[in-house]
Amino acid sequence: NQKKTHVKGPEAAASPGLLDAAHDYVKIRALSMPTSLLGGVLQAALLGAKDSVTPLVSILYSTVVNVSGDYLLVNKFHMGLKGAAIATLCAQLAGTIAMIGPARRKLLAKGSSLGLLPRWVTGGAPDAINSKTFLKFAAPVLTLIIGKISAFGFMTNAAAGLPGQPATLAAHQIALSLFFFASPFLEVISQIAQSFLPTFQVLPKPQKGKTVDKKEWNRASDRFVLRLESVGILVGALIAAAVGSIVAFFPGIVTKDLAVQATAKPLAYCLAAGAFLTAPVAVSEGTLIARGQLKYLAGVYVASTALLPPVLRRIRAGGGPVSQVWVCFAAFQLFRSLFFAGRLLMKRGDGDGGETE
Image 1: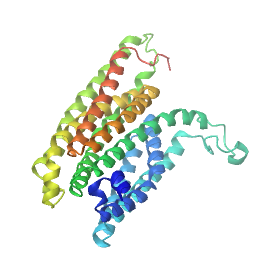
Image 2: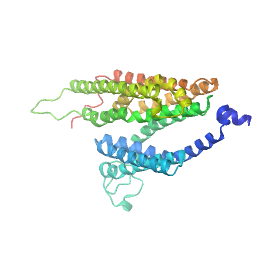
Image 3: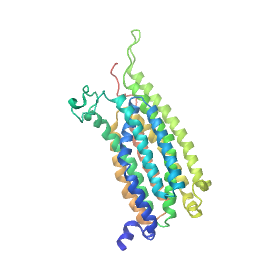
Image 4: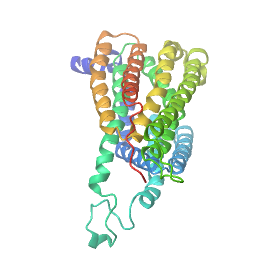
């Protein structure tokens, strides 16, 4: 019993129903991990091919399945957390499946198998994109996704070990759900960068004997990035104000439990800060992906993700308020935004393009 209390936290160890529900939820959600990773890679590849419609349709399918699943499984069949987990799993499957067909048609030669099957089996032409070139792109993107997902897992683990359960973990989940709700509004600017910035990576053909100045072309790319950053900061401020206001002034929208409302209110400022800082992270991340800075991105994510667990363990051991977990997340996003912005400033005016079409 002492060992269980040490691992899970005194409050969580005293609430076996909470732990059982969380265990069931995690087991079901873990099944979606491969689908989530594949979906992220497909989305990035499609955006690189300037196809922003397919990922949008994928999100539409995912949203419809998730909302319908929650309504049926949670409200109608009263399956609780299990139902919510199954609905999310099905939503991720639907979204990923919606991208597989278009990705195969747009990115691969007819009959391609990414080089995983011999040509005499597929009957297709040699792959323009084979397993080696695909993995060269996919591996860093997978690292980014793993870094994002693991950060939220570490945060939830820390929140589960703090005093005041189950209200503490419930408040954390409310903040996390609001953040996930706000994320697409921020990630879309990253997708815009990934879709349109590659145009600036190659100099256009000379027109009427006039060649395009490489430095001016790079400056045009930098101006576009600056506009995206400005839009990102504006959208981030609006989203941060919205999610922060819900927690601070209208917590009844997300929970009717007065104890959970009281525990969630102190999270308003740090949640807003985390959401706001996510905007420059998203824009800079999209820019670096478009400019082929994948190794640098992966390195920052690995470093920041490695630094996060020790800090969260100290917060959990100290038994402080759950707001400390979200202050840590805001610092986490600040770390990433500074390193990403620093890289962009260092490379300003030094485009990776330069070859003529």
